[in-house]
Each structure stands twice: as structure tokens, then as C-alpha cells.
Image 1 (tube, one colour):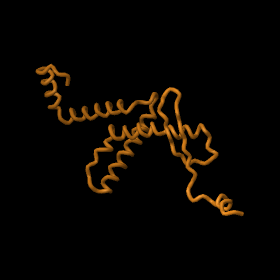
Image 2 (tube, rainbow, N blue to C red):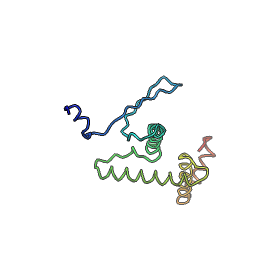
Image 3 (cartoon, rainbow, N blue to C red):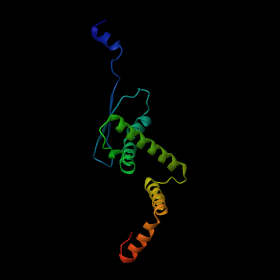
Image 4 (tube, one colour):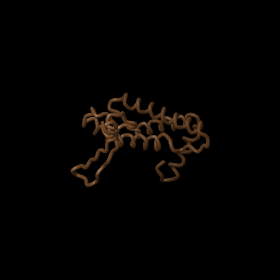
Length: 144
């Protein structure tokens, strides 16, 4: 047996990595994915896994805009870790509540509900703000 034949029978040190190319008919842009899945993975599973990037990016964007994931200004790792964990738990809770309803409500609708609750709490604690708001509406033709 030659050394080349012997090399082919040895176990691999690293897993096989496949390069998957996608060229949709309606677009000129090609997409490339590196995937290290078993050989028994079907084409449908491969396509489903390759296209999970968009929902993940949407979730990350919602974490940043709606839950303040990118607002941390501390300097310690434990502080950053605490902030990220709280943001992730809040996101998971909101997703669970959103999916519990039929039809599912959006993050913007949840934000509006939470905002109304906090404004109501503010006016309950400081009733003077409600009279100030009425005076401001009467004196200024602004939408407050």
C-alpha cells in the first residue's frame, strides 16, 4: 500500500466543509455559504439552514432597537454579561407573549402597550402632569 492510499484511509483531523453556492433566477447576486453538515443532510435541510441568517439578523436588530442591547456603556465583563443576559431574557419573554396571542402582535404594538402603561402610571403618580398637558394643549396648537 502506497503512502497516498494509506493517507486516504486515515481519519480526518478537521470536519468536511462544503461550499454551497446560490444564484437565484431573479437576482444577479450570488451567495456563498460554508457548511459543515453530515453527508446525509438533504438539500431541503441545507437550504433551510442556509436561509436562517435573515431571521437571526432581524432578531438582533430588534434586540438592539427595542431592548437596548447596544446601550451598555460599562467597562467590566460582568456588567456587560449582566446587560446582555437581561436583554436576552426580556426578548425571550416578549417573544413568548407575542406568540401566545392570536394573531401574533408585533414588537411595535408591544412597545405602544408598554408606553401607554407607563404614561398611565406617570399620570397616576403625578396628576399635576395631566393638568399641565391640558394647559399646554390649550395654549399651543401642537399635538402632544
